[in-house]
Image (tube, helix red, strand yellow):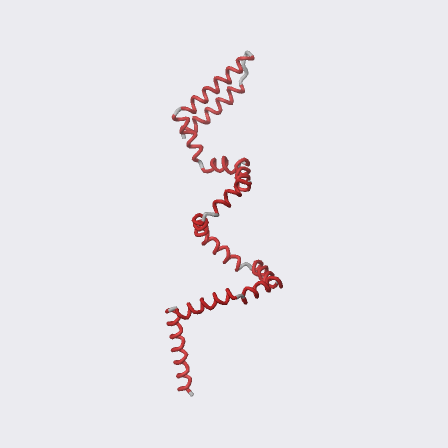
Length: 188
């Protein structure tokens, strides 16, 4: 609290000194120089430094200093959209390790975004309209008829059928069906 008071007193003294009139034309320049020297000297003291640190650690002040400055937002915008930045991001994302790391970090957010979009009626209607387009339907049909797709589908089905979990589920379903059939026969 003392340091804030000191800083406030310093600022008021500077304002009063600069507003006061002097007897000579050069005296005004001396008063300014003396005030400037005094302000700089005070800011160099431990109390002055502490006052500045207190002000800079205040969250409201940080927001005003950073977020209210048009220069900061303009610089960020120019930096991210410049030709050099575009080249940098292309080069950076061409590194498989970096791209993988970014993708893993964004996976959860992307899944959440997709789930939110799938629940959005406007987005769903837009997707339905896209899939109704004749060109899209033709491309999908061609893809589903392709040899690669059929081979991949066959591989997935084979892996699924050979999976121990699938076998257990199928056995359970067959036993349940047999049990239900025997109950229905004995009931008649």
